[in-house]
Length: 72
Image 1: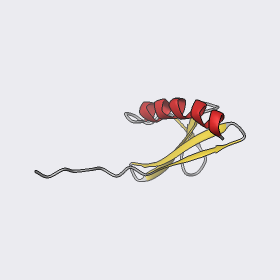
Image 2: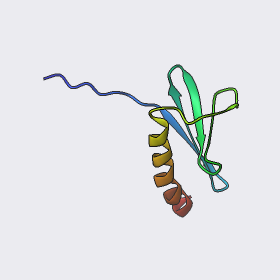
Image 3: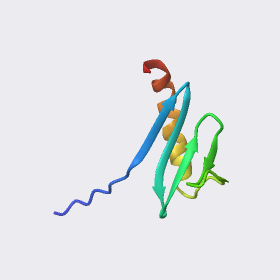
Image 4: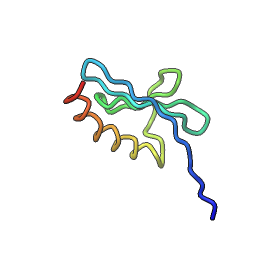
């Protein structure tokens, strides 16, 4: 049996009660700013939530934010 594991790299940025998640997505680095609920590309331009995975990153950020506030 062969098991395939996908590697997903993303960066969590947290400081001053601000959270951002950045990740490679379709050959570009996209960032979700949890506090402003906005997405940007690697040039800092605001973009629409990427389909179909953007909503999943927003869910991850919503789960991480209270933990980071409590422990950092």
